[in-house]
Image 1 (tube, rainbow, N blue to C red):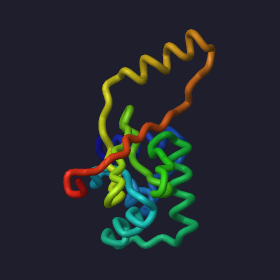
Image 2: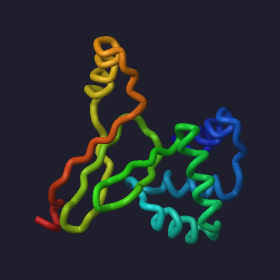
Image 3: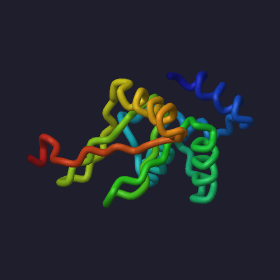
Image 4: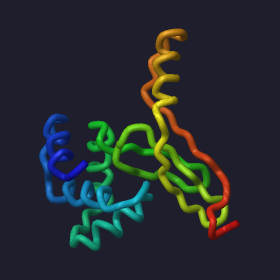
Length: 138
């Protein structure tokens, strides 16, 4: 995934690639995992872009609504944001509170299809976190 592909997705959702929106997306592309709002703001500041809180929330809401960025609530951590890249779930360290994304095979996608077929319930999303201790905190 690169910035050109993300720009196409923004346009397909009826948006424009503003300076702030581009900076937000570039910050996610340069990140190894999910970011809290403060992390997004710090990444933007390093890029010389310092939108006010309202503008940043508006950009994130657009990107979430367009299916480009996901928002999750991690217990004791608050809201985190990351690019949508298929099924990604999180490892949450109970010691340092680091949150990392972890890729998953398509097992849960198959389970969502089964739920639709057997339960007649269309899943729009899900969250899965694994809690434990990272190597530094063990």
